Structure formats: structure tokens, C-alpha cells
Image (cartoon, rainbow, N blue to C red; front, side, top):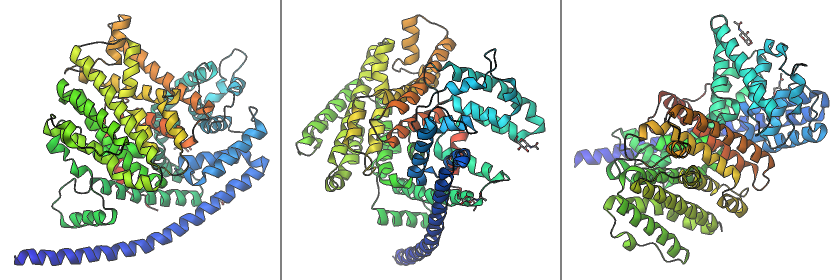
Length: 578
Ligand SMILES: *[C@@H]1O[C@H](CO)[C@@H](O)[C@H](O)[C@H]1NC(C)=O
Ligand SMILES: *[C@@H]1O[C@H](CO)[C@@H](O)[C@H](O)[C@H]1NC(C)=O
């Protein structure tokens, strides 16, 4: 009794200390905010001044490129758009300044469909790229990066890609001894071009590199670092909001910190569904799931949306594992029907009741509840904001996702190997990207209207292409592992059966080509699609980028690799020294 009382006093004192500390932090934070604001103004001015002076347009492009690589472009969206629009209006396809490859990558990256004809200027009369290009490593790298903006049928860019890869590989090898930092940089570029990199991770890599450049700009560097840290502390908060209570810990300060977060955010969630206990088969990876969210959109203004997204993601991962490997066919059938019924009755305001799940085993009741909780806890807020329609779309897409999971369960149950087309029509939806991009739109503020939700619902080419990258990459790395247990036929088996191919390597090669085509398709759509605001397009490409990071060689989401652990530490633990 005495000990308990004493503990309570200690607790109280600690809470007070924590409050005081957080007060102090707030003051420091306010100062930093002020510095960030004035640096932002400085850069905005610089963007305008360089835009006004045609002699400095090349410099302008380089500035925009640097800003993007430093991860601070979201502060200057309007200015950058305005600048590139101006460049496009003035020069069209006939850019005559320097840094042509950067010009091409930036304009295409922002939706301006400039022609690739300009690349022919870099060929000699025999039709090969000029030998002289290989003497300039920077130029070669810029050319290499630009080729990733290509769409289907641009042979000159395909040529440029193999030309640059050949020469860059050679240079990297030759410089291994003499200039190892150059060599490493080339290898990193070859491993993953800028276009496939996640913006947040790219800035992590780029900021230290930029700092080493002798002619770097101190203001830009400072802004990038301060902003990185500021965003990082928001990410940490979100992560604790999501994981509060989830990890029981014996460290008192940690418990108190968590309580503090509960107090501030009134947040608890994943704890409600105790995954290790209720679904031991599940890949229980909240931090990795959150990392995925940061891949899609890391910017502070999407904080609310991110929280919702991670929850949707975690539950979909739980469902995926349940449908894939754990639930019996009968259980899954009942579950699927219950979900169908829920969303129907729900639109007529009758609340979900447990009755339709009576026949389910207990672990499934909990999954069902975890699923409904995601939407129910937001209902009031969304009603107030007059955005209930967003939740309805999110629910519908989740329902659709589950329906397609069920089709796969049926195929597996029957040992059925679908044709390639049949497989696509189901697997591109069961991969979940259509549902997840819908969830990403929820609570993103006024830039997103119902039109964007409607657009996704029609499963347009851009959503399809991102889903294709997701599904096919997942199938390739999953192929070996999954064949060891009973599993639904993937792209690999469907292709092998339909085309009577037995050599797995050939199938992988073909499928990798499909992934590349998916990227070209996304590029094309991002240039011609005017149906949705730019961020929606970016998020879809980012979803594909996450796949490239996590599933290139192995499923590192399931078998968390060193690289991912490292990335997570850098994103959420280590701050930048300013
Ligand atoms: C550095 O960048 C800031 C903001 O873009 C600009 O105002 C300043 O002139 C730059 N300094 C140098 C030395 O280029
Ligand atoms: C390595 O290459 C880079 C890029 O070309 C260059 O800036 C740097 O000076 C080189 N370092 C050495 C030690 O030669």
C-alpha cells in the first residue's frame, strides 16, 4: 500500500516534469519554426528572381532539382509549378539552355509532356550516342536519370538507358580504387534511379552528399536539415500515437511518455487488437507499416490521413494473412458475407451488430471488430466535416478488397490455376493498392474532392499500373517461398501454365519486363491524366516506389532486412545534426 502510494507520487512528479520539459521544448520549437519560415521566404524570392531573368533559367532548373532532392519541395509547390509552367510556355519542346537532361526529367516529372526528340541531338551520324558524352560523368548520370521518365515506344530513351548503364558500370569499376566515393555514387544510381526513389529516403541520402559539395548553399542546407528534423519529430509522435499501449514496457519514463500521448491524442488503437495474441500467424509490423505510409506521403499536412492510412494498412495486412494462410475456407466464407452485410445495413444507419458474426471463431470476431473500428471512430469527425462520403468510399474499397481475397481463397481451395488475364483481373485488386490509395485520400484536406474518389473507383490505368507493379513484384519474390505451402497460383504459375513455359528464370525475366512496362504506363498516365490533382498521381507512383524498395530482391516487409531496419532508424530515430 505504502509502496503504491509512493509510486503514485513519483508518477505524478514525473508527469509534471514531463509537462515542464515539453513546455521548454515548445519554446525552442517556436524559435526553429521562425528560422524555417524566414529561410523559406528567402528561397521563394530566389525562385522568383531566377525565373525573371532568362539568362538564369538553367540555374533555376538546377535550383528546383536541388530543392526536390533535399526533400523540401513541398514548401514551394506553387512556385515550382509556376516556374516550370513558365519554362514550358517559353521554350516548349525546344529547350536551348544547359542541363538538358535535368530539364527533361523535371518537366516530365511535373506533368509537362515534352518531346524526347531532343535526345537525338546527342547522337552522331552513325546513330549512336556520342563518345564524348562518356567523358563527363555528371552528364552521363543526368542522362541516365532522365531515361526513367520514358513512356512506351520511345526507342531513343531505351537506347540512352543501355548506353549510360554500360558506360557508368565501366566507370564505377575503373574508379573503384582511385575515387571510391564517385564509384559508390554511380552504383547507388544504378541500383535505383531518382525516379524510383522514395522522396523522403532520397533526401536522407542527398543532404549529406549536398553538404560535401564545395559550392553548396548554406541557407538551403540549413533549411533542409531543420525541416527534416521537424518532420521527423511529427513522425515520431504519429508513431507513438499508433503504438501506444501496444508494447507493454517496464520502463517507467516510457510508460509515462506513452500515457502523455494518450492524454494528448486520446489515442490507442492497435493495442485493442492484440495481434501477437489473437493472430499469431500475422506479420505484425506496425513500424514497417508506418514506414510504408511515409513512403506514400511524408508531409506534415497529411498527418490525419496517415494515421487512418496506417490503420487501414495494418488491418488489410491482417486480412491478407488470414485469407492467404490461416482461415479455413468456411470461416472465410462467413466472414466475407458478414462484411458484405455490414456495409449494406450501415448506409441505412442501422449500426453493426455482432449477430452476423455469431458463427465465426473468436479470433475472427476480433478481426471483424478491428476492421469496423477504423471507420467507426472517424464517423463523427467526418460527419462534422461533411465528408462522410470519403469513409463510404474507403469502406466500399475495403469490401471490394475482401471480396477479391475471397476469390483467391476459392481458387486455392479448388487448386485452380487461372489464365493470365483471369489472374490479373483478380490479383491486381487483391493486392490492395486500389483500396490503399483510396484510404490515402481520406482526410487530406480541400485539395481532394469526391471526383478523385470516383476516379479511383473506375480503376483507371494509373491505378492499374501501380497495382501491377505491386502484384508482380510481390509474386516474383514470393514465388519461391510460397510454393512451400499451399498457396493460390500467382502470376508465375498462371504464366507458366498458359504459355507452357517450364524455365522459371524466363518467367521472371518476362515478368520483370512487365514491371518496367508498368512504370512506363505510370509515366504516360502522369503526363496525360488531368482527372485528379497532382498529389494523387504522386501517391500512386510512390506506392510503386515502396514496392521497388521493399520487394526488389526479397520480400523485406515479411523478412525484415538490414536495409529496411537501417532506413527505419534513419527516418525515425536519428536526427540530422544542424
Ligand atoms: C543561397 O540560397 C538562397 C535561397 O535560395 C539565396 O537567397 C542566396 O542568394 C543563395 N546564396 C548563394 C551564395 O548562392
Ligand atoms: C571523385 O569524383 C568526383 C566527381 O567527379 C570529384 O568531384 C572528386 O573530386 C573526385 N575525387 C577524387 C579524390 O579524385
